[in-house]
Every structure is written in structure tokens, then in C-alpha cells.
Length: 273
Image 1 (cartoon, helix red, strand yellow):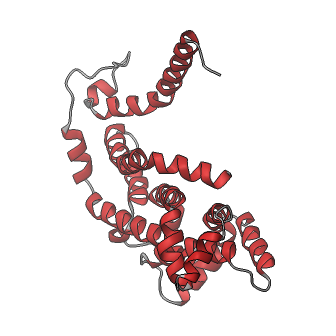
Image 2 (cartoon, rainbow, N blue to C red):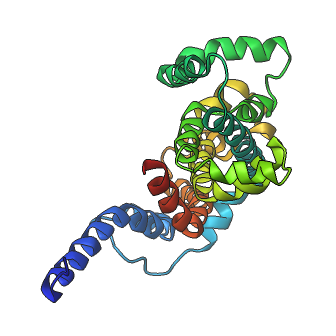
Image 3 (cartoon, rainbow, N blue to C red):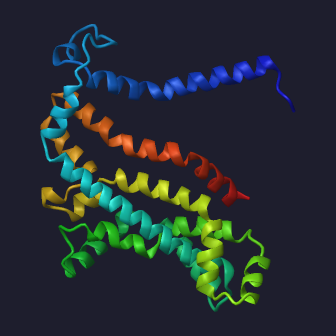
């Protein structure tokens, strides 16, 4: 059904209002970061700073080793994303395209593990990583990603179930082995849901606070989320540096989401079909 011009205008107006509602906190955060201490504490509050204090960002960034925190966050995020993409796509490919003994039982067991909150497995994981001397290293934050995630495996498996078997049968007739079928045919087909998994994993890992808090002790190993939390404790009464670091921290996920939003929509719609 074709919408009239008035309906379209009303729709766009509602979208603009909703966008403004969700963007307002971020805009206020940016405005606060650019104010001077006197303007932040003034009453009534000023909406537009009299003179934008861009040096607030540099001062806040240099007040603690945020460069090291940023490097650690990038390292953990990139490696865990690579691990999730490779492991989850391989496991999902096996569940979707092969028949083997106890397949349904193993898949139900995989889904059942999604019901366990991370808080339940936190202590056993800490004991295991402590036993192999991984505490106070980045390994507990990176290595588990190379064993897959139940939700991502389920997402990819549902996507692969909708692909006709004629594709792989034709590849087998041409002499392709199992790994070639996965790498050259199905992996490119999974581009959209893999982008979705990558963005979801990036947001989860980038904002993860509890994991680094449990496994990391040395400040040189801190990620940005943990560094920001400790930074807030030092600046309880000074809100400007906190706003500056928070803005800098949300820039990478926003950029990644902006460039990958097309694939995210395709991944979600493809997995639901």
C-alpha cells in the first residue's frame, strides 16, 4: 500500500522525534565535555558552552595510561571477533549440513548452555585459568572465543539451514572436499550474519567490565572499560574528564556500526527467514 504525502511526513516527523530523544543524552554528554569547570557547576545550567574546551579531551586522556588501555581493548576485541567468526561458522556448518550420531542431542545441549548466566560459570573459569597460570593475562578474555558462542552458533545454523543442498552437491561433483565447500562456498554466503556476529561480539567485548575486573590485576593489562571505571573512582566530583573519556570510548563501536549496518540488517532478516 502506497502511503500518502501526509502519512510520509508524519512518519518522518515521528522518526526525527524518536531520534532526538535517543540522541539527547549523547549530545548533553558532548556539551558537558566541552565546558569549563565553572560552567558545569553554574546554575541555571548553560546549554551551549561559551568557549569550547577541546583540551579537556587531551587532558583527560593523558591523565592516565588510556593509550595502553585502548591498545588492550583493540587487541582483545579483534582477536575475540576473529575467534568467534571462525569457530562459530565451523560449528554451525557442521550442525546445519551434516548428519551424525547424537546431533540433535548435542545441539539441544548447546542451546541449554545459553540458559546458564556467566555469573554461574565465573568461579569455575577462574579456578581453571588460575590452575594454568593465565590470571593477570589477556588470555582468559581471548582464548574462550575460539571455542564458539551458543547464540552465534544458533544464529548461523538457522541461516545455513535455508540454503539448498544442491549447492554443496554440485561442489562435491566438481571434486571439492568438505573444507573447500565451507571456505569457498558457505563462508562467503554467510557474510551478512558474520558481520552481525562481529558487531555484536565487538559491542559485548568492548564494553565488558566484569571479565577484565576478575581476571586482570596489573593496570598495564586493563581494558578501556576497566580503566574508565577506575578513572571514575578518581574523579567522583569532576564530571568533565569522565564525559571526555566516555565519548572517546564510544566512538569505535559507533563507527563500526555505521559502516556495517547494511550487513547487520541483512544478517538479521536472513536468519529469521
